[in-house]
Image 1: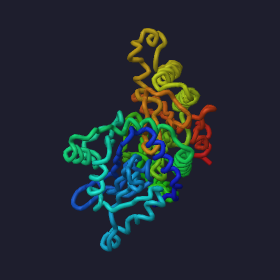
Image 2: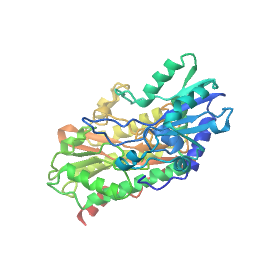
Image 3: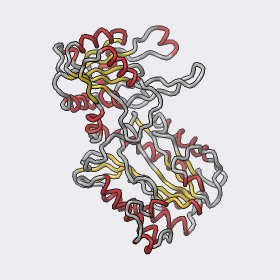
Image 4: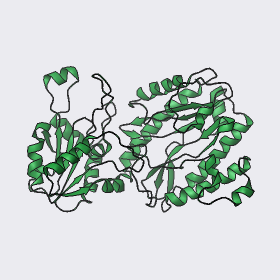
Length: 429
């Protein structure tokens, strides 16, 4: 793999945490992601399904992980099934993982080939009391393609219709929300790579540069630092484009006096970072641009202070809305008299700040977590307020990644320039 080896103690401990949540006599199954086709004989780049990675560290297609803590045979309490390498695969694709390598990566002692799966699985199904199967239950998921997990659920229920089936996602949403020390270190490395990419831009951006040229600078820096690239589709939005929240075309030329909104970040070892910064194309913010920029920065700092154990996302977002309301009044975008008469369920600030301030971050950019659960030490959140003024062709969003601890929080992006004056100085140095 491109990234440095991860100690298998991370995955061993993750499985121990997972096993504690299972009912007695349970068998759990996890499948790799599919290799997604394009057209003709093409395929998209492989990205591992994050649950099997979190539990095993296996980063290879067509892999299966079985966890059956109460199996009569000790060697069947944890099993990995792999695609077996042959000479032709080795020549055309490169050798796949050996059994020994899979054990070294995952800490799972029993590794079989995929050709053995149905036989072994049938034995375990005859022994287990219930089976936990996986699906995508993320609140924001829109799944239009049948996944490998979805096909497996159909196959399993067709072949074993009388078994007791359980959902595994409820457990994983609980566990994956709390990051271990090793996971925080991997997220921090993703943040560090992101910082290198961002600093590279400070001497590169100028009037006439194209958004895709900025994208190219970033991906160059990310790849040379052992990242696979962007943790999500990069948003490089100049001028009015910054008012389109999910703008990803990145095909416009950056003009004098525009501000570029950059929502761009690297992944590392499948872990995501998530950064947003804004740069003045000319190297200097106008008075109005800086006023809006500093308003967003004040909201961001106020919101960051609320990311602490014991708070919750609903109260947090309401409180951040109040901060934003005050700033929008100062910017003369809202009138105090109208705010006092507003519908509390449809606050006026949402005209200029229409998205949430924070989301869970981890193996997925919008990582697992229960929005009704109180904040706890070990959770990592983004903090990303913004103001979007379409009539002024100005969008400002600022975003850092925040680790909650027992003693407050830690900004994992604290070394990435954010003050307007520092940005200007670095761009003109």
